Image (tube, rainbow, N blue to C red; front, top):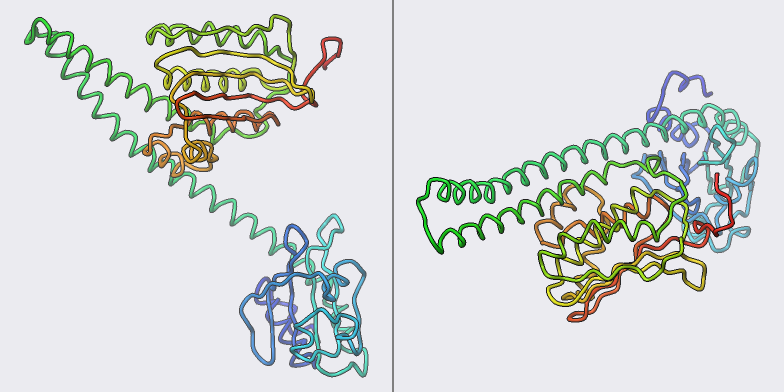
Length: 398
């Protein structure tokens, strides 16, 4: 009986099989289904129902014979399947009497789907069961292939979307670069050619500085986007000292802070606090937070703190007395950096990429960023390493 569909592959095979189970073997409903990743739902790849192929359907498998099917060698109810599964409303609605199902496995022997036939009449012989059992192995191979193709298509689609959104971002950013560059060149040319004198020179120099700061922001956002393409494997797992890193950050931010007459309060902790992670990623994360703190603080100070919490977590904090953020702005600023369109939207809205980029840097190390802020009082940003990444002074680390 299955010889007539032996030459078919893929969706054509699935459709031919479900049609054969109904028209030749007497089932009323037949389908090939794929389990969801969380193994809680079944989605049909092919569904033949009362004489016609139907659109894709999906449903929770709990309290249905599907659950039994994917957890056993097979599921057979020759009659009264509704009695066995009283919570399955579909069986009752369609007046299903008999059910036959075989699980379909992947290469590791894990059930990934099922091939099923249902009848409104009780089974009088084993023909339907034997046909499904004979089809199980071939259908299993076809389902594995179908799932692999789906994964490839999704990966390719995401890659194409990333490349397209990257190109659009760069095109938009390139256009934005022209305005401040034109201003810098224009004002600098006037000063060079001595076409202006006295107070105007200082005024034009200020415009050049402002345009330069705008360029710096643009370039910072462009560099931040590189984090979208850093794979998880690039994050190292090495022992390093947060206290020493805090001292490095203090030195590196001094020049920016001095330009705004801000005081940087160094960490009071002097003893080492060792963690396991990527020192380079953490340094970039710290500098992101320090740069933000200096940028949004006009009066007061920026403090760097290194602490160990009661739960054993190690924390590197940047605390400022700047303008702070409302809850809505903070939520927006902490949105994940998922793609280039998302990044460009953030850039256009002026929220910047410092916080979402820092979230990526910390997440790659299995650590996290915590941010709390209050309008008019300032912002606290904490780079938190959980207890399992904290190394006691007397611990070894290889």
